[in-house]
Image (cartoon, rainbow, N blue to C red):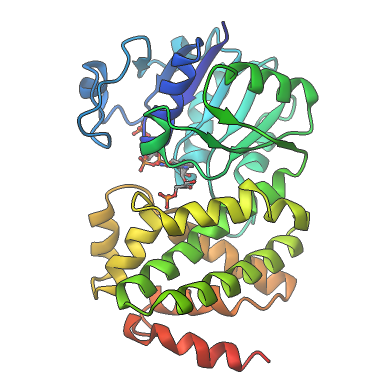
Length: 326
Ligand SMILES: NC(=O)C1=CN([C@@H]2O[C@H](COP(=O)(O)OP(=O)(O)OC[C@H]3O[C@@H](n4cnc5c(N)ncnc54)[C@H](OP(=O)(O)O)[C@@H]3O)[C@@H](O)[C@H]2O)C=CC1
Ligand SMILES: O=C(CO)COP(=O)(O)O
């Protein structure tokens, strides 16, 4: 039995904690905000209506107690809170502990992906990534899924597969941590665009054009940022894009749909009520494109809608814009 601590009691941290616990591990979830602790301890999470959490998962606010015996520590907070969370847990992390990021983000200015931020803070630890098509609402019910496992450490790969062995998940491995995370961060932006187009009722032909051209932006930008092209065709890239555009659970798609219906960015974020990582990743994506001189017409177009330079009702204008890239 492995001892696993998940940092972050949001949708994803909680869903992972539940399946890891059901897979026979001893799991603690550290909530730094403590915002849902009372309800979590009585078995309920506000994001999973009608679902009873297994009592074996321990929800705690005690940093030291949660980390002292952990074999594996999973960072599952939203990308904005990764650095503040690292500061809090840093004194209690041991070099022997395997650290995993499940966060989808690209930090503005530094252009670092989550695993790089974690590795910088803990240079002697093994750091791995799990990312892919994995909506928490399905995962928590035990439905089958797959994630890209990224690590340069074969023992880490073995340990992670052991932890998830009894769970219904396929975990192909790669050593491309950068590609896996750039795929996960950038697909969220395309899903926002998809949500806008969906709300505008532009039709399946347009959606497919948008996603294909968006995938080209994703691939060109991620490869310029250090990704291996084949990683982007795997679960961490194309696979995750497919689930995010296709799922009613997607917060990025929902945010896009709200924008498409004429609601302001601020109100849309509020209505989604959970993290919308595509909005957080936008600045980093634009900066990376600028630095590497990569053309990203679809991402730029979506950014112009978010920044209110283009009305969402003009989404179909993407066709004219793409014609200008011949
Ligand atoms: N939901 C999903 O299906 C999936 C999500 N992900 C990724 O996982 C990450 C977390 O997403 P998700 O759980 O869905 O988001 P939620 O909006 O459900 O939860 C937000 C998370 O951020 C943490 N947080 C908020 N404010 C603070 C703060 N001030 N200090 C420290 N932590 C804070 C919360 O911690 P606390 O609970 O302690 O308040 C919580 O873990 C994102 O990067 C997302 O892209 C990846 C795959 C699937
Ligand atoms: O990354 C995810 C599924 O793989 C979650 O996507 P959303 O953040 O859009 O809900």
